[in-house]
Amino acid sequence: MAIKVADEGKMKNNKVIAMLMVGLAAVALTGCSEEQTTTKLEDQNKTNQYWLELSKDTEAKLEIDTIYPGVSVMGVDLGGKTQAEAKVMIEQELNDQILAHEVVLTYEDQEWVFSFEELGVSADAEEIASRAFNVGRSGDLRQREQFVDGLLLEKEDMQIDIAFDKEKLMATVEGLCDEVQREAVDAQLSRENSKFVITPEENGAELDIEMTVKDIQAVLQKGENNQKISLSVKEVKPEITKELLENVKDIIGSGSTYYSTSNANREQNLIVGASKLNGMLVMPNETVSFNTMVAPITEENGYKPANVIQGDEYVLDLGGGLCQVSTTLYNAVIRAELEVLERDCHAFPADYVPMGLDAAVAQGYIDFRFCNDTGYPIYISMWCGGGEIGAAIYGKEIHDDSRKVSFDYVITDVIEKPKAKEVEDPKLKPGERVVEVEGHTGYTVDTYKTVTENGESYTEWFSTSYYFASADKVRVGPKKQENNNSGSKPVKPAEPEESKKTEESSAAAQESTTQQESSVPQESTTQQDSVTGQDSLPQVEQTDSSAGATPNQESEG
Image 1 (cartoon, rainbow, N blue to C red):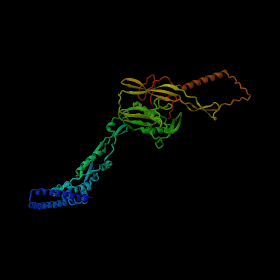
Image 2 (spheres, rainbow, N blue to C red):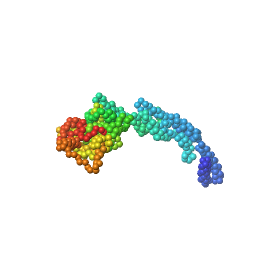
Image 3 (cartoon, one colour):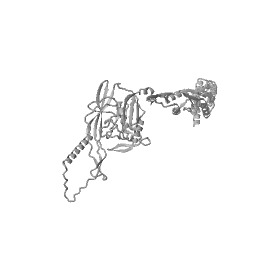
Image 4 (tube, one colour):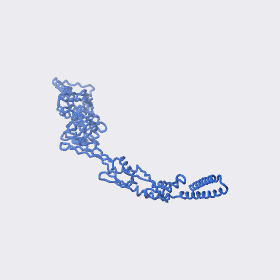
């Protein structure tokens, strides 16, 4: 098809030239004699023949299947080469002059060398060869001939278009991340020999991929070899700095409770639980979940079986006693005046803390959570041993130095124990009773917070706690069988008057004793808060974390 199109073009050109020559001949013969006309026609025919021969030579010169002499790419002369030959030469030259060129990427004392091709540079040698072949092949024959003849005097060195594969370039740069980037290291806070020790922070490094790619592309556009490019790396500041940790210096709240060392398993749980919280750094606005910190409650994590409350009774389970750890921490938290997010009291009062100041926990059920709302880091210190467990919270005191807080409670309701749950025990004598499990009197307790600052005090409601009532569990002897063979009720013999008085006196004493054991003080007593060292208000009962037990309190859970 290409050949056919070329022949048709030649025929059209010849027709144009012939018509032109005929027209010129007609003009030249106008007004001439026959002899003159004959002579002029002969001359014109010679001229026409010349132009026809010249046209044939021009077409022969221009319609060739090789690149015109004088055409080059990147300084390489492609004249006389076919497109296929030119493509091979261009590919070689591209590799030598461009693709094999190298770029050196640097960061600190490290260097990475990549070729242009590895960085995504490419060029289409076939397309370049096609463009070189088409140089001088547009326009009419005269224009083309003039242009091609001019190439012999002024060569045409073609510029090439370089393509950039950005995805390939980005992938190459991203491959350097592991070698360049490093995580920022927070400053560390520890307590040694009753003093805080701060390990300074370390800045991190993050490779700015987008900026580095732009810098590399700018160098690739120039095509220069062995150019060095510094990677664009951003400094990453750690969240926790030495300057920030230097604010941790004041005890802003503390509390302690006591326990019996006779229960080794329970003491072990207290020690393990306290160790999970000890040394904990809590950043501003961070929330602490007690259950999360002490989990998992497993033997592998150091916990032993000890009493826990389930329903209205005590059973052995792993982690028994952790509630005393959470309660001790709770008393430090409220004295530091941190925001309490979640807190529940026990089912029954505990003997290691006044009512209203306990914080019960149970994995997946009840949690103790609080938030550090001081605006500065806080540090939790907990210890356990020798019958005492304590907690201290260090931070920056944001209140006036004269500020003191204390906590008091008021019993607003008393719920008597339900009727005893009796179980007959044939091993006991008739009428004999053994209390297997002591029940509990229930209470509703309001806790109040008293703040004293610059000689002025005010009291405000703080929380309400509900403690359930539970029945005694009693084993009783079988009922006495009555002997009535005669069918008539036997008459009880009269007792002496002195015996009656003795019995009545004994019954009265027993009733008095029972009332005393079940009674709860309804009027407050003034005690001293061992944490704050302040006297309580006279209208409420003074409490603190190390005070004695309330009636019917238990030490388990």
